[in-house]
Image 1 (tube, rainbow, N blue to C red):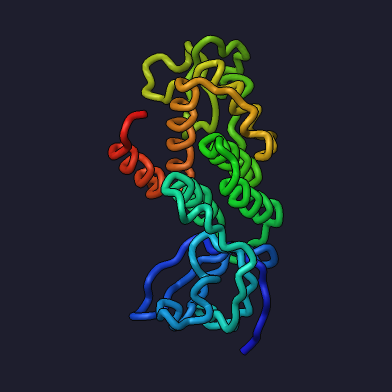
Image 2 (tube, rainbow, N blue to C red):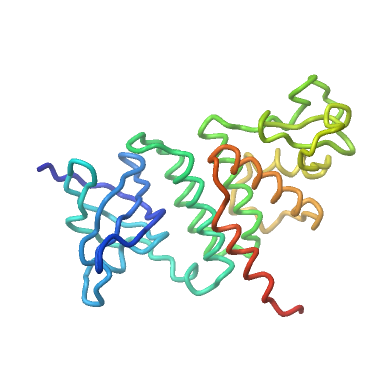
Length: 252
């Protein structure tokens, strides 16, 4: 049975037996991998800290017929700042979830791995973590070949999208006001489209410098929720979690 090493981020984890967990790893070398970590739910397990969701760890894996097995692992980035803040934790889950949903097993993509790890690191420190997630989502879909068309109408080619357009998840881009008539597509103002174009190439380090209106934040959230739901064919569990905890917040 072959052993191999990878550097990976834990993007999902689910219970298998009493103390075993099935991990979904996104690795630099092999892409997405499914692996069993035996006994890691035991308090005495030495592997426990390195296999938590969002962790960036070094893994030694043993190849199996269906699932590989974690033989050894050592944490490199545990991200305590993500676990100590519900908002940041929810945002980290939003970052990992589409990587799981949009990639297939064992198709490596170094750019996706670097984007994922870099974004998790920034989420520990930036104050503008909502826009950091939006930027990640846009850059991820672009890297995977689903870059949205934000420069002109995907239906008629009209470049006059101001002041109001709409976003069609099924078409993968903006619709002008005329083409959007009679549809139930998501509203996307000129400001929102401009911010999304900027975020496609924006460095997460600079996110705190952006000033974005509440209206555009809400529109972007809806646009990308619909687009990712269309691409993955499932509703975001992490976004649902963030929306649910927001109901319990005390106004400033």
